[in-house]
Length: 241
Image (tube, rainbow, N blue to C red; front, side):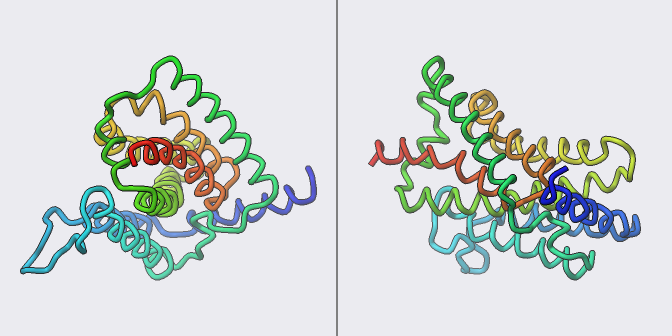
């Protein structure tokens, strides 16, 4: 094993040891609080205003939920630091290594080949979800994809995948099971918004992001790959403009 990779292994193992160190009661408490944050804050309020207060901050469409996504992700960080009393490295938040970035570039290249090939054979035409996002304009789309890349990775890969995996203990495959459950929770709203065709066109990219987080143990690398995979939506945005 190369020196740099050998140095990464103890750190990755330490992250999981930290989560395992928590009592089952504390793990469940953190997960319940996180579930409330994801349902009531990260997902945005069920109404547009309350007592005359605009809960959408004057925004409309997909952008209306972005402030709530940042707030929800921030509250999850508070849960990690104050309730679990763990460091942010337990969310896999650390500086990516050169090897991590290589994984990102290879994964992005493979996804782009898949996306281009599928776009030629079965293009996503008349997709209401894509059309809705394209109408946001270049700046709006950039805000949307940066928000998604950062906050979704904190919620789904950094927190849910790791904590759900820890609930299954040290048994073989526990971490993979946690990642699979988190992936299922992540996929559901995307299919609802973009339609079933999202599974064919975008699920491979989602699997690649989950794999980078799971195998490289680096959330920043997963965020970068998530961002790169979403950037091509700027193409229909420019055409729409």
